[in-house]
Image: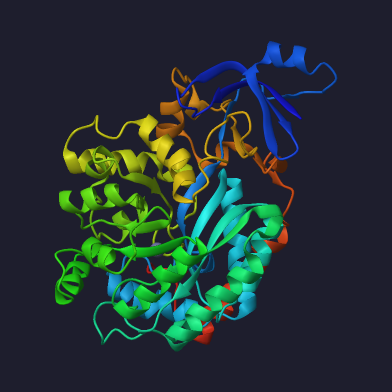
Length: 460
Ligand SMILES: [Zn+2]
């Protein structure tokens, strides 16, 4: 397949933008990248797909996703974090059946594909609502993913009194053994598109002994590991209570830092933490919209980036964002970092695009395979329809996409050499039935737990 007449944002080492560019695919790999006329000469027998001057760029990589939370979108708006967790998110997610879990994963995957996400890291799938169902759905969707299986042994969050819904609770042995069983079953599934990771809960939800155990297992098997760290100021108190200067230093002591570790949030971190993260090659996934909505703080990503930490970003979940649209959150990455430093130059559009593509690929351990449009890499890319009033004029496609585009401007999605969406029609999943199923399951879920969610204004 050849895609021609595109503005190709390559994200290669020199960050070249090819005007009237073309990309040729052979199997699941990129076979050639160049000017349209050159590729037409090299492949005279191919019938090219005309991109009409639209932008072709690497698929977006969301490094922090909760698949199970898509179906509880909008169920915890305008609440403080503890009410948000205890009264809504844990209760509703904890009451999920396996079928609910699979339906939410399908809804989430559909939304991600329709807004240009081709790969993602799921941070903590629980056994109760079915790892298998979510994994099957993602294989079917054609997406590339690292699926984190929840690891925990304490049903709380930092403070012992904040007890979780029983449907969310797993004991230490079960959660570790299930992770290893899921690894044996799903690692490399979907022609190599699926990885299985440890999706450990926040310190306070996992004992230090269990972190020691999983970090050793992860190293032994070269598995990825992701954990929420320093999301809220109270996380500093927990680390201090354990005898550490910071949560990042707690992580270091328990083997949680390293090139296969992705720490989510890291809002409450400082220079000493950045140094440690950079030295150990630990990745950070920033979650700008989620942190802003739950008002937990602005992560110091400028300092991290300047210290050489690999920072990507993610959409987090349905109740905290409330969408899984990476393009919608692009401007937030730049705005929040610039506001924090009171300097509009610190995180420009180009940095945001790097975080959304090549830095996400590094976090997944896949930067040799995805994250840029280069010969030999996997064919994971998207085409953004620039023929829109809100994208006109577009003197610099990088800044136009970051500051003005919407996820719904994505027209075509190619993953692993296969067209997963074309003309906004998803080929791998049945959009109508997925939306219909989520619509009927949602009231069942909230009814099961007696949670009442309705407009706060009078409905007449
Ligand atoms: Zn999260």
